[in-house]
Image (tube, rainbow, N blue to C red; front, side):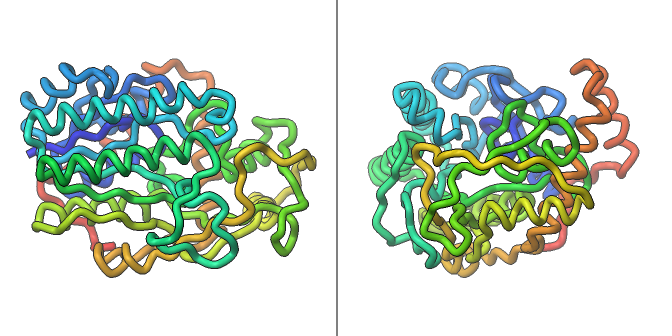
Amino acid sequence: MTVLVTGGAGYIGSHMVWELLDAGEDVVVLDRLSTGFEWAVAPEAKLVVGDVGDIGLVSSIIRKHKVDAVIHFAGSIVVPESVADPLGYYENNTSKTRSLLEAVVRENVPHFIFSSTAAVYGGAGLEPVREDAPLKPESPYGVSKLMTEWMLRDTAAAHGLRYTALRYFNVSGADPRGRTGQSTPGATHLIKVACETATGKRPWMQVYGTDYPTPDGTCIRDYIHVSDLVAAHRLALARLRAGGDSLTANCGYSHGYSVLEVIDSVRRVHGADFDVRIAARRPGDAPAVIANSELARQELGWRPIYDDLDRIVADALNWEKYLQHTASDSPERRRRKRRLSLEATRPRKKNFQPNAV
């Protein structure tokens, strides 16, 4: 059987593809390449360029590749952008996921894993937030994801689909083996922005607000290494295949860092200072959001191994340096370089099982 990864040419999706291939899975990627890159897709995965909202296309992929599980990453993720363009977010994140679910139900795919977000909680405060906390999204982005969670709940009740919705906190870092990372131009993730500034891609960066009710006045987030996050998805898939019930769970480390603490880490790991400027608050930013991840640890057997801010930053910086090194390459040349370097690392063995996480 095959796993369909939507948005698999993007940041988290491309890491998920590698995680699945490392576990011996067959993988097909569906991505319209609006923010993702063809060269970021692992060579062993099949890439289909198209839209998750195209019911006919999704149905044909499921039938052709004998898909038994969908892991859904495709969507828009920038909170301030969602405030400026709510209808675009409801279209891309909610309406198109509704179409994807129709194809999944039509083709009798039994398992679905959804990329949700801590933004469904709104401003949760300094204490780690549990899955049963009040859901009060403060941006159209958060609302669009919550609406999809509701669609999944109702679809599962009506059609027997079993799903896992993983609520991400702040995903950061890059593949420790250097196979993929955050590559989107103009990215808004704090660690990505700070690493770009440290390495000279940006002349300076901004801190949006220093008057929040937090110890140093800047927003606090729970930063999770992308490799730990995709490991949780792999474990969620195994649980569903073993007959597990539908589940909604947080993915975070249960502790947070402020914006200024993250910037200090980048300075420390990089070994040099860079220009940081203070700006006004952005619409939709909550003061603090930290995960209580006990449910994921208990139900999935998830054991994070990269829970260290400096390690997250180091992997992100290494990827940034790789992007600088290949900045002048054409997409085809970059794809060819990646393929050659990856083929040199090891032969892929079917049913290879990595160490449990």
